[in-house]
Image (cartoon, rainbow, N blue to C red; front, side):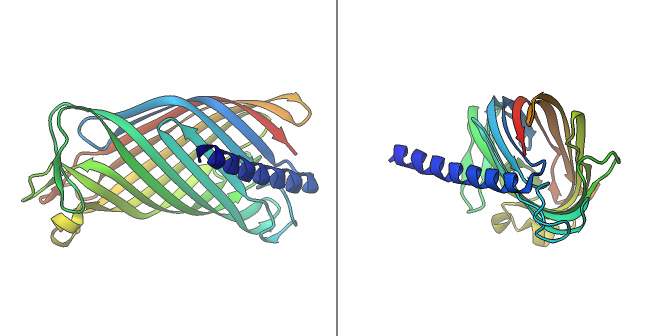
Length: 306
């Protein structure tokens, strides 16, 4: 059964790859396919004892955003598909072009899903109140927790070879589910099923050209917090204290070194920094420390352009 699943997955991937190649070749554009192999690490502080993971990662990036079906108009560019896999990380994203005003200015929609499985070592036993009302003790010692995050982004993008400091501006909606520590008046638990949802704005610079490229993205979110709210009902009693401000900064450096016509080596390093704090600076009913996370990676990629 597992062999059949692997064969089916390989066939599906091969079909997507061949379709992407045929579309890209038909357009004679600078679209690319890139394979990466490297190292990935995460350190999340959403619970009182930090949760971490480090492992080898692989990724594939099929980027046809510069393939031109037509110069301007609806759906005038190709899509982008990206998959990243590490031992305790899965991330998939898809980008679709919506409308191109000029050859270098367009609107895009992006969907991104991330799942982390993080190792933690409980220094003391925590009372974990789940959203279904079940309360369990974490015990002392090693454990693994899971965090999921989904983002939907709608943004304007200028050509990726432009030199300006900002060439991407947009709106973003985020939803994250993760265990998180908090203090809620009248509740004895230390740990909850947390759900963070809300809108944000995005600014950034995306650049992909020969030589050294620096990219950055900054998201600023206003999030609604839910700490096992179906049980605690804290949003009804302290709605103003159930809002957070989140800053998310992504930094990326990569170098495109041409080795043959259409072929490039692409070493790459980067990180993602998250800081989330309560909007109310003097909460009385719902309190939590700042939530932080750091994700980083270093990899070597092989890229073919068309």
